[in-house]
Image 1 (cartoon, one colour):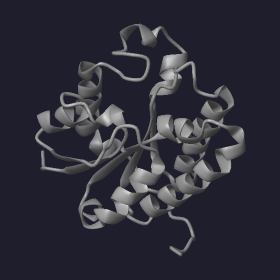
Image 2: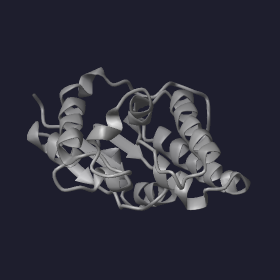
Image 3: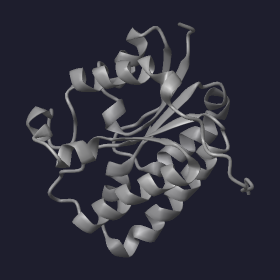
Length: 187
């Protein structure tokens, strides 16, 4: 297997030491973790711009910020701000022309506005579909099962689960698709 480069852009779900990063590293791939806990899409956009060369050399980019895109504003009245930043992020990711995975983390936190949860998670999925990105929707799995019984806390999965996810992603890197070809300009 050829050595591949994987870049993580996200929140705390990717930041734990023995989680996704370790699972990817266990397969012999390189993994560059640009994640920062407690941050929304704006941080991912910042890291994308700041580390553009690194992302241009990636074989796969995994992005996930839905939890803090919700928590950042947590109000339907402020949803347009989150919407704008998410659109910028996905458009910039598209122009990298790399395999992209949109990771939808579980959002069972009781203090989150339920409408914001629905709108933000749906927007992430719609943007991923628009650009032809791959989606791993752990939140959907969480809602359809007793998955919450095996979480570290209300907001995070155990390391061993995320590590296995990282391994599975790396071992299936060839099965993920590149973005769609759509007629847009990078303005």
